[in-house]
Length: 208
Image (cartoon, rainbow, N blue to C red):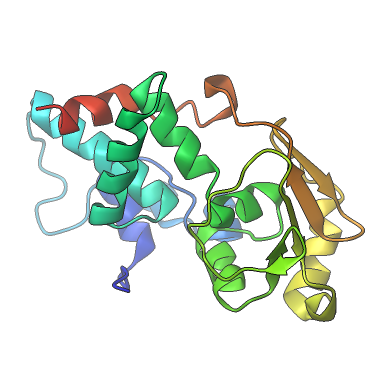
């Protein structure tokens, strides 16, 4: 599958916001966005007037890049959200939040969504006792996610076990640091999802 292989710090600078794509580095003084918050490129400093379409496009890109989803896949998420009962924008964010790679990140097992995708893709995780290597796997309330027992002795998971003790997971998830596992309690409500994302602009973008 195609994937973005360029600098992820460049994406944060382009969207004008920290997307936390590099884990712990994003919280340190080495964060590129903190040192250089202007848009990338030769003309990044130049101020431009942004119209309604530009705002919608930037917000769509911001949401898509935050969750690490490609364009066609993101559009499919929107179509599914539109066909579900309820508010389309909230349905969209909820589907993205319930992706396996995002839940692994939210639980604190991985320091970033990119690392979470790496863990899932290499078969380190199991859902309800069954090994799963599909990052986009949609979780449901009651699903249990865990690092497979035979993989827990590896160095990244030793580190994760220590950090999980102080990690604060969202209310819709539960964590068991001792067994490097967690579970989905309920679908996240809007106030339990990222408040800095404006899903209504994404809906307007696709409804043009």
